[in-house]
Image 1 (cartoon, each protein chain N blue to C red):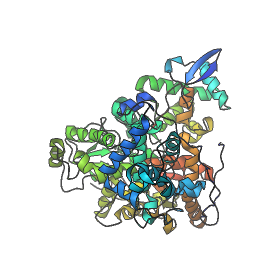
Image 2 (image 1 turned 180 degrees about the horizontal axis):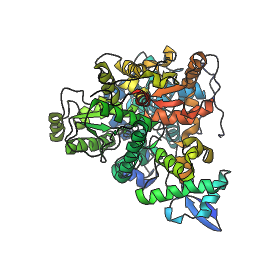
Image 3 (image 1 turned 90 degrees about the vertical axis):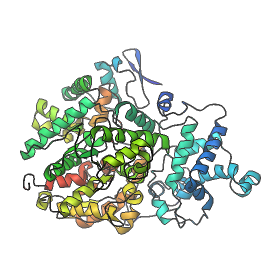
Image 4 (image 1 turned 180 degrees about the vertical axis):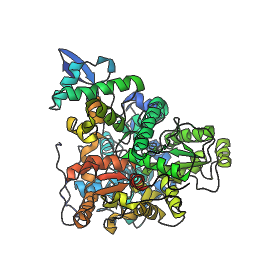
Length: 508
Length: 111
């Protein structure tokens, strides 16, 4: 199956002895020039690229104060060294967050600090060279931007910001990653990461309506482009395509149906994911998000709800306000028009978990937990939801609400160890633009800490269902679970559980 | 640019072995690609490959896994209309591996 070894699971999580260069060979396929062009980047490395890279880095550190502070303030205390799932799974010292940061920090010091300019040998300052660029390309594609290290850093240094900056500098000199950049190009051309055209979307949704009717006898609709609908659902395109994602989509449809909410999808904005964030490109992140505003204005919806997608929720919760006017802050005419249009009685944007949770609180849904009695469930907090956003109106709501929705739908729920959940959650191993077959080794190895925690609840509580609210987590786990001797279908959507439990037609 | 040799001709493929030009496809190419993965294509594989090609012709994308399992269930019997059966045929995943043999682009995104 693979030409690498799956890390062993042990009695408890071990911190491995370092193995220098263990993952130096890992690098994803590079984007072809035509894909780079679609995103406004040069096609390939050209003479004089070093100056372009250094200038770009300077631009970023002047524009993003956080980035500059993170580069300046590390005191090498070592608190982060054993916190990264990729270090724990690979033992490569360059996967220690501080070492990963230093790949960029050393270049920043050389060109932008007094000591680094005049005494580079004293402060570990290094020139931007091809060798350095190759290291960046390898190790900044071994970071899933999950931010676990930043929780343990006494200064809160966020490696994700540094990894995003590194990727932006690389794109600026024509060195882009195929997986992310090809996908962003597809969003511009077709409207979603998959490249799923409107006709196929409609056909797939009609098939779902048939399936739900066959299963339940009830006409649950999955509408597209319904002007005047109350809710626009923005969900990852994997929800239309992949297993177990689609069970979640069926769950959302049943919830809307049962609550009597008039909703629609959009063929123009049929993607919640926003890979612009992964590559650190504000311009591309905005361009991807703008399609959602266009759809919301065209369809005249009152609410925007986001489906189960981790990084989409981070972009939506943290950036949509100023990017496109969902939430207050945007000041262009279209952003203001959208703010006027959206119903202020609901959060903008709202997560599907928040919507379902509120309906459960109001008693608007009847859920029969026994429908899930063959499931013994645990919940994987997705990194971007856990550490970069919130849900509900309480601190930590992003941990509470999904668990409450699950516990309303199942009788058997067991949390994994506290140091591996909530804000301490371990990444699935495939986030941040690494969910591609050419990075399978780092994905499998990076999943080790999550698999360790999962094994403990499997042994102790016979857990057989790993619930998640992120399309990347779901695809990543269905791929890596078999490496750790679990069935691939152990991973499921939270709304897949809701879908099983919900009693349609019981309330008016 | 990589290539595979089929019937004395060199056929262009991308880094991951997917056809660069969909029009190059023929059944022999599918068989050669499968052989490289130690897979002998039988009539069950062909049912899937042909369905993928028909669906792509109409919709410009491979079918969702659910659409595929339903269609195969209708053609080959309900016991085969599930992803377990499809994974037995295409252990690297029906969406990706079968698309490759069918000469279609690899599905991208969070799948």
